[in-house]
Image (cartoon, rainbow, N blue to C red; front, side, top):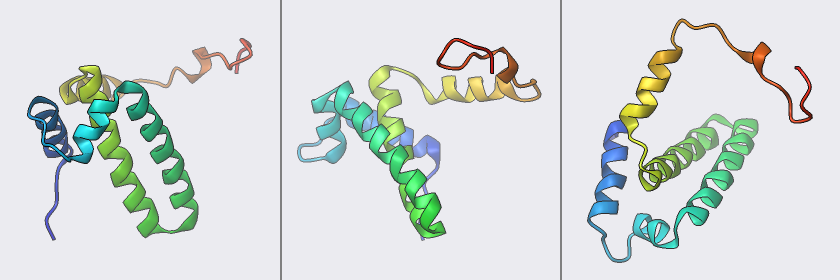
Amino acid sequence: MASQSIEELYEYVLDRKNNPQSGSYTDYLYDKGLDKILKKVGEEATEVIVGAKNNRAELTYETADLLFHLMVLLVESGVSLAEVKAELGARVGTKSRLHERQDWRGGQQ
């Protein structure tokens, strides 16, 4: 079974953005624009939650879909995978700022 890294997936969707292939689902998303991509990311995130409640295989399948759509969103938004990795790296060893965040009503959590 072949595997694909997150980096390879990002490069694939970036290449599709730069070199459109007629009939490609990825190109369809880019053609429809940011709103369609955001809608798909939301749908896939919901499917991950449902999959997690059902079984491991469904969670795995839906997570792959979500990661794909997140890569499309990053490319469409001009955010590099290196930027995301740098943000993750900056968080290593730092304390959570949860106590500094406010809930949607404006009060402290």
